[in-house]
Image (cartoon, rainbow, N blue to C red):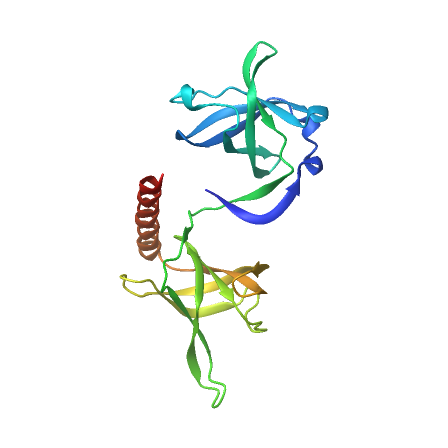
Length: 239
């Protein structure tokens, strides 16, 4: 699966001029579908790209001005950018689309599990020490960002020197609304900074991996599939 990592990549840094016949995926919203294509040419002076014309379900809806996303892989990394259809032409005997050159793009990371946004009310409990008597206690993490079959991403609103990469927990508890609590050994596998406008500050985003058995992973995986379907149904109703 592919998920966004909030890192802007300037198109010039990728050497787009050297990219010829690069396989790509075009993500259309209307009609909603993902189709295959190829990046055929980078026309720097015209600030545009030429891609092979993909096969779409309803060509009548494809008009200049249409916006869509394009994914492609270069080396070991994948990228996504948003662009605008400028028109159509024939390029070296191939029917092609001319699209606007993107000014920036997003780096994509391949993940083993699909991540879904955590529903409101999701809570993650980490073991900690009581500040007064040093006894073991549970610390509630207020903001769980996303959930997958392998772990969760969560926000630390305040710095905590004890929560570092590779830190292991004997058990953590994940409470998802309308679901049985999930308990598992876990390990912090990543951390990065992100600006949260609603909080008006920069916070730490931590990735927590569950070291659980196959049955527990299957339980979380089934939940993410159900949540994914629910989100897709809501999106279709709003389009």
